[in-house]
Length: 286
Ligand code: CAA
Image (cartoon, rainbow, N blue to C red):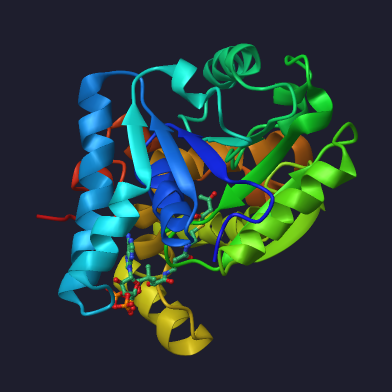
């Protein structure tokens, strides 16, 4: 496996999603440049990569030699200038439009003119990001799912400005990485979140109304609908702040009450109970 028409891929932001994407690329034989904002964040990113590949070794899914090779393909840096040789850069920084616009302005400055720039946004408009760059035809969305090393789907988002060739190349890379691409237009929630989050939000509403307990709702959807996780376990995995952002973006576009964020979800986010990453959300994690 290799990156097809992309030989060197940058990843900006090495949180849960960015580190997962960097791991997927490196496992696929692609050379990766991972960039974070400062040394502390870079070390946390390194920790994600080492932890995830270390777990795979423990489970007998990866040899120690293969792990070393994978980690050896990832160069880590705090300097955007190191992305100058990349032919694709995937941005995975927090979901704030102003921050993403700043990152894309910087990428536009340091990256080669023919480089494709991609955002892993799950709730913002790819078009809004594209129009602030000097290369809107080379801006695409590549939406991975959490956990990125496991989930097969990657949504490839085209705007009305995107060059079809750039979309094809990115979809080709996704296939080379052993994932399944679907190519779709730039609408809030794309396909999977647009359908999934109405359901997750209704589960929160059902809990709040006292219709059923958290555990019974989770059990019903696991044992009755064949899902790998119930809605509350899944929201805790995704992060309740991300759930709220995605719902707000979809609601702003759809005005469908199913997407109006549940007050309970909003309350948990305000309280800083964001799910697994903070140790408590709908469930507690020790
Ligand atoms: N990183 C890497 N690998 C992981 C992992 C992680 N964070 N979590 C689990 N895995 C791997 C395990 O190592 C294991 O691999 P092997 O079979 O090769 O040993 C495999 O996944 C199964 O893991 P477990 O046995 O520990 O647990 P499980 O069977 O319950 O699976 C799960 C865990 C894959 C997360 C599964 O429960 C699942 O698919 N849940 C649904 C996840 C989902 O719907 N994600 C989409 C969220 S929406 C989103 O992400 C979009 C957005 O924009 C917000």
